[in-house]
Image (cartoon, rainbow, N blue to C red; front, side, top):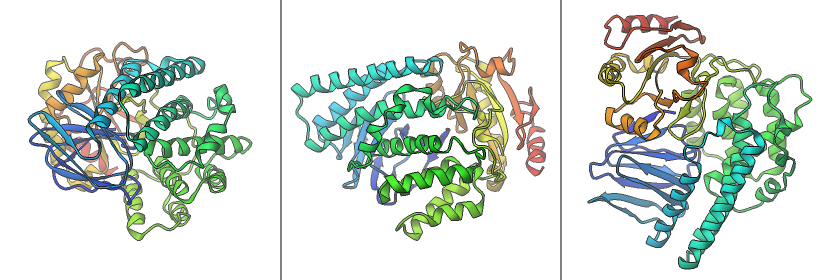
Length: 451
């Protein structure tokens, strides 16, 4: 949900230690890397190497915006030279086709307010997107023959864009048990695509994420009569359903993803129980999953409670990937929030002080506090450009001022920059907090970390 900075060799396993290495030569370029499994965009500044699973990845900055596809069959090299891109994982024809395809896909969905759509509207819209992508694909294919494996990948990818988006819609648009209705969207009554898909030999991330999301929905459907909606009870239904339907690799993926998504509700003993259910994984893989679980729980008290509780902070918030998120996801840490905009001069001048403030904290202290930057820009491109230009290295979100449920309306913001402090329990300590250039702020935050 923020931008992670990689200045040295990085090994990123993406929930699968059998992924392939991508060696990146930046040639002094700085850019973001985003992927469908990242919670965060990764900010790449120097040469690095990353291990990636099969899937589609987007690299972008002010002048570069392109995607690559890795199939997990080899190690890859990516380099930038004189504003040209060299990637050895795809031929020139496939590379050009892939980028034309995703450029078209982005043009169909960018600047669309999905949160305001009713279920039927959303389904119709995404079905239309799927049809347009198929028409584009088949039309381009007449002039551009593709390698067979790549052709097969894109055909399946188009279907999964549609079906996974339906899963994400119902999972993300319902924040409480009262609102959550499995039958909210009529087309979920037809589950044949899921049951056909679990038998397909597909290995890219969007496929796995769809299987995980739909498994959650189907197992939730089977547990609707349970009055106890604790994490343990929900997981029991999830696991019993998944182990009957999924092969070993998909089951391992789903269990790992469950741990990471519900880490807040999973205590150490419960975590160990789930870990013991993973099949044929190495100690190295277990160590990686444990490390990710611990990162998710830094500064949080593990509690097992109703999974479908209402939001504490019910306003619109979107990350750099375009996903709608909630400030509730960060509860358990001290939050220092800045509300800003790209056009705000005083905001821009104070970012260096924010960066200097973060550097005062020790590593252990930083695990208990999040610096969150929420732009009220209406122009998404100016917001993302400012993140790069100003080197804003906290957790970056946007809540446009023209939305009727934005953060500005929620906190009754009349001028920016505006700073807000929330404690570990989710209480708003100060709605108009000290600015980062106030030297007394550091001690105030330290006191909250100690409580």
